[in-house]
Amino acid sequence: MIREVEEEQRLLRLRSMALRVGVVLAVVLVVAGIAGGVWGWQQHRLHVAQAEASDRYFEAMHLLVGPDGTTPATAEDRQKAEGLFAELARSAPQGIRSYAAMYLAELKAQDHDGQAALKLWQQVAEDAASDSSLRMMAQYCLLNARMGAAPKDELRRGYQALVQQGGSWTPLAKEGLAVLDLTADSTQADHVEARRLLLEVQASPDSTDELRQRAGMLLQTLGEAG
Image 1 (tube, rainbow, N blue to C red):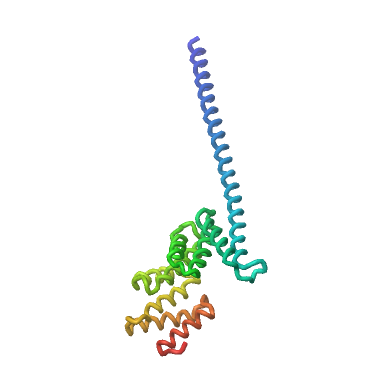
Image 2: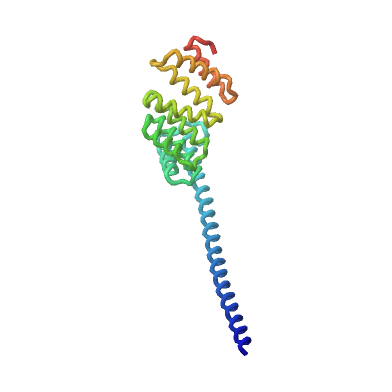
């Protein structure tokens, strides 16, 4: 009789445990289902937002080139385009946001609004989620825009950082370093370093023809034909 009671109690405990496990599993499945649904909805919203932002980006670009793709934009269309780019640079999903900021920075630079351009380039350069090529472009634009205004040592560190990252921006960064070595207060040693850098720019397969020509012109200022 005692064994039968003990066995019945054991079975009751097993049933109770199984019931608790079943409840926990059910809760886990429900939570997982909710999480999966939320993730799916978030992805859907992201895709929709990206598509909408992309449409607005190209709308802004079309405003700048006119209906036939070559007509200069009117002042009104340019203002509308800048407004669209500004909105996208503030709130568009990543990717479109950085491209819009870079395009707007170029427009601001053309409008001689250097401070606004600097802010936008800084925004992209500091955004870790931005495409690495865009970040490097923004860093390069920042350095060039501050040439003659920022301390030489600060500019030199910036160009050297671009050189260390490698890629297609290396020749442009080396050109920037050479220009720093050719300022009015530069020494003969600086000129030797500038010549070395410019010859590397000319020899680099990543250099454009225009960049090689500029390097050649700078070499001529050193009395060395490129």
